Amino acid sequence: MDDNRQQQYQEALSRMVRMETVSDPDGNNDMDKFNRFHELLKELFPNIHNACKIKEFDGSLLLRWKGTGSDKLPVLFMNHHDVVPAGEDGWKYPPFSGEIAEGKIWGRGTLDDKGGLWAMLQAADELAAEGFVPERDIYFESACTEETTAHGADMISQWLKDNGVRFEMVFDEGGAILHEPIGGAKGTFAMVGVGEKSIVNLKFTARSRGGHASTPGKNTPLVRLGKFMAYVDKHQVFEVKLAPAITEMLMQFAPYMGRLGKVVEKADKLSPLLEAALPKLGATANALVTTTIAFTMAGGGETVNVIPMEAWVIGDMRCSHHQGKEGSIAAITRAAKKFDIEVSVLDSGYESGITDYNGSAFSLVKEAVRETFPDVDACAPYIVTGASDARYFDRVCDQCIRFMPFKISDQQMESIHGINECLDLDTLIPAVDYYRYMMTHA
Image (cartoon, rainbow, N blue to C red):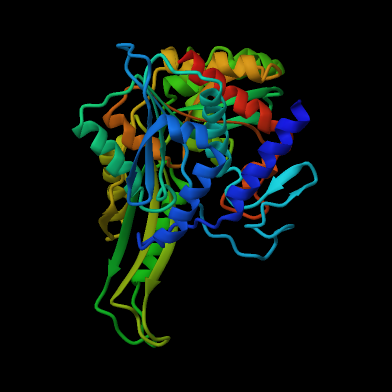
């Protein structure tokens, strides 16, 4: 029976991957390809489509599966259907081939996020075919702009708010099941996102009176920008703090960390020590406890022998919850002023809340993982450093969880938005069973 399920599952997901649904960063999407993808979803999952009332928002979808009439608040399951671009170079199999080989399914979107969308709808379709009706309303949301403008999630969440819909729980993509998620944690953990860092894009501009390159003065615009970036790279510009969710994450890891675990298990009592140590343990550890900024673009100057009157760099800043957007902007602005550099905010992003890891939503995820992935050692909360559509649903819910029910390797984690994105075939059945548990026990 499992062989038949896996065969059916891999073929369905392969068909979804083969449909190229790259979203345009400027918002000028080709709606025909998204409409064709919607038709494929109806073909693959007819039972849940027949059971739901469907509303479309410029290529993004909201489905409502009406419950039996309970007075409980509804729940929402989310996974997006747009993907990032994929060049052909370096791929073992073409990125939109949906190739099934080497015990994996290959292609753009297998992990981010058509795999999650497939598992979610497959579970719902099976339950609907069996005659299951949820006790409370279940909504499904799938946007076509998650990788770009987030317009779909923004619009849908606002529409829900305007229409008085609130959810008890929201479940989106995010963390996954990883082995040794940080160095020394010798176990397998479900990494469950309980919030995400907000993103602020900033422009840093240095100006001068220009002049001929043959008689340069000191601290020209490019030099000042270079000094500024070197300063930020070397110094701890932002506040460092161990958030409660990260403290809990470390304490979940502690039993699997040998001698080091004796220290980590006291994370709640040793915060100052860990706050001093974690930023020195690498980029991932640093991102858990502080705001970060990456300088990603630069420009200035029009000819080789003229000192530019203006030069600039752009920074992508991911803000910690304890310092927030405004505090982080103020901190980087103070650093920029040391070098006579102007700061302007290009995009201030959308801040997310933090879900209580002792709450009903996190508890339900733990139960579902325990039932469907029995070899997982623990569920650990963490703060997602990337962005998801879930942040917009803080408007209508106090518990937004970010988790993909897939076991993935370090290589697969690196393939997200990279080359050779793939998903193991043997994680397909547990993923569907996870969503079945979530929907029948919500």
